[in-house]
Image 1 (tube, one colour):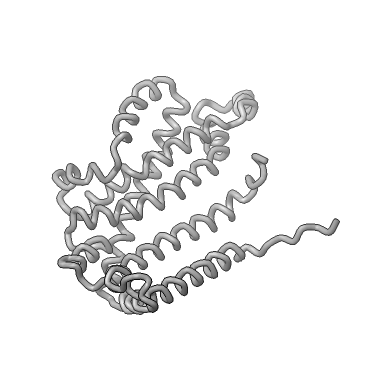
Image 2 (cartoon, rainbow, N blue to C red):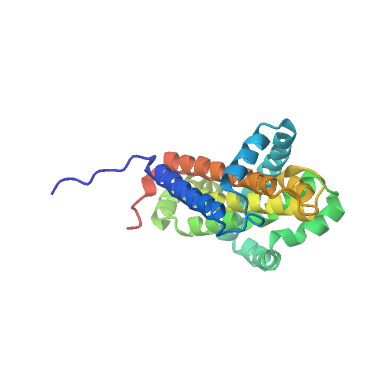
Length: 262
């Protein structure tokens, strides 16, 4: 039996691009034939044209940068909080008993629900938006960290102790390296949440900045639909780029785990 041919790493990207091109072509044809009302869905060609114009507009790119900053700061804070709380609740019985009730209470509400309170405390701007993002993104990182710590081989921990490692040494040298693939999976999930929450806050509590603030401004009175869809597409491309970037890092550093659970 001949060996199976291994697909090139770009194969999923090519298949996704072909699928998207087919979908856009069908939608373009449906709008042109009047099957889809152009008043509710503009031609994809018009949307892509507006998207191209926006990407060459310095003022709009400034709004994109505002969104990127909010996502970066919020996600960075979530990584610190999520890994710290996850490690504490996984390795300390006292911390688990003290923190888990509070964690379960806070996470029962969607992160966006805390936005009005945070705006009242921090005013509108980067701080309130970033803290909202951090609250929403902490949970997948936290619980993935706990899962990763729970999966660490107890023999490895016992061996480290037998060589004189104290509790913190075991956590630093054994737990965190072993749990890192789980932690990074949590970060990838949180990154997608971060962009959604950031733009949602910009739309619902606008301060005139960010992609969401731009959408809220253009959408007043039912503005140009092609522009609205074009700006939304930019947000989608931003999310896609972040996902592919994190996926590349995942493959580069944690590719060894593929197939271990089979």
